[in-house]
Image 1 (cartoon, rainbow, N blue to C red):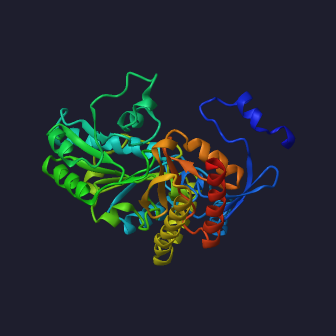
Image 2 (cartoon, helix red, strand yellow):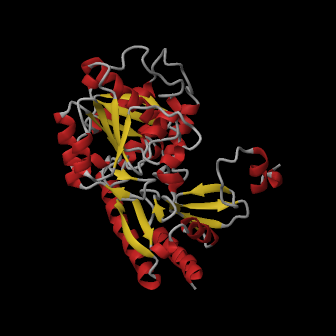
Image 3 (cartoon, rainbow, N blue to C red):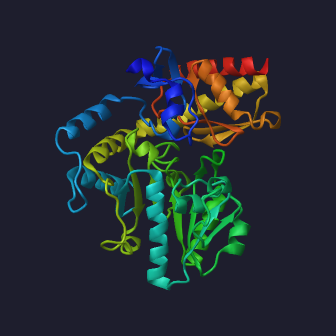
Length: 402
């Protein structure tokens, strides 16, 4: 059967909404992956900022094995011990008092946006329903989260979209000040835009957003699906900025590769999600929560978080070295181990070409739009893997530019 499982079979049996690379990975360990032909790759993609502790981390494997022999699933008619442990760990480590568990970032954001509108309705009436978001943002692929996201291409063919959503330029405080009103129930943003090109928010912008939300009785919602769980060098990026949101969403790195998402908020705001107002069949299942609890336990330590900042500098230095040789990057930016290298204008639209060539040379990386190479590796990637992966990336770029 294995000999029949080829990339060509994907085109035969799968819906064509993805266009995966030709190789099929079959095994991972740490920051290295092997394909069907036993070729090795260094993983700078991390499953799009998901594999926060690399592949098959032994403590995560053990947590999953142990829980798989005890209890897999319950309906939300019951609670379970792993969910309670994880919720307690998250609330003790963050600003939040309450947690809602889901299965993905999109589901966590769907819950956040619904809660923001419900809270506005409960405290200020029907008119307080507007959500303000920002251009080039990304919040998921459900119809509501795509509508809140600031990339119109993802709505093509899916109209009519949910209304009551306004999009403004990112990092433009004056635009927000002109637009926010007593109808605004929430301002939603990523502290580091991921899909929008790995763009960190300006500290002055975030401070201004917080003040404007307070002035207009609007909730400040941080989408930390991609930036959260140590990715920024802090457990959550809001901690790096010193600005506390009212609602925070988290997923991706939270499960270290196992599907899980969560929405965090205060007790006062959580009251608007009374009995029966929202739910998730699989959200908070024991398997996911056991793994996520172990992920937070490992990552939320001074050693791991400090290591993320150190590895950021190593990545940046290596990218600058490549750029000194080939002059292909206009800017290297980001925070922690969410790093973007924007291609020079002459290379715009060719990001996919670069990652395909990198794959041929044995290194996996991402794009954030067609013009930005994105790196979101394991938070504990060894320094030798960073160096070797960058050597391979440099070889790929050398071939492309020769």
